Length: 186
Image (cartoon, rainbow, N blue to C red; front, top):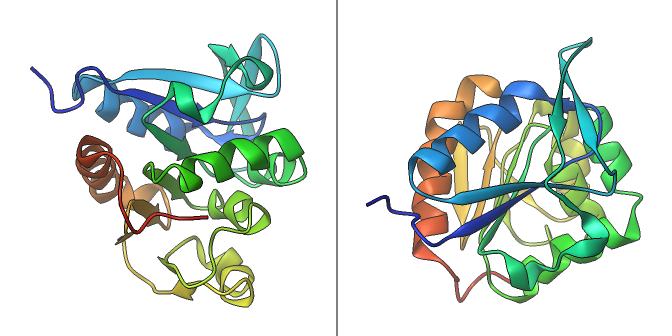
């Protein structure tokens, strides 16, 4: 039995996510027993990038319009430059993210993924990390930013880059297994 048996995890993404920031955490979650769905405002497939190059396409399991945070036990936001930029201007995506925080459910974001959290207005007072390119954005939004491979704050897990994936993956499995967190809030 895995530590995440009976847990359902949503990966919210758009085109332009960093491929390994979706595939590596998804693999770790599935290996731990979770059921994982790729959720997107798009229907059909989403396209990955590896740095500046377009890579594979991935099947969208559920359209954002069809789901609710009530359907899931945790949320993962992969990075990439294009993906979070698209999500942060989508009101349905922002509400989906906010609903996880309001329910006290764990949320994980890596690299540029925390940009979506800025527009969901859930970073003020939270300890976080990210890719250096959005450090000032997070600080200006009220986050307490630190340069660490993984930062956990009451169910919110953040990491900087793909090099941090081993630590990030271990922590997301742990936090998603713990379930709701009293200190997780919108």
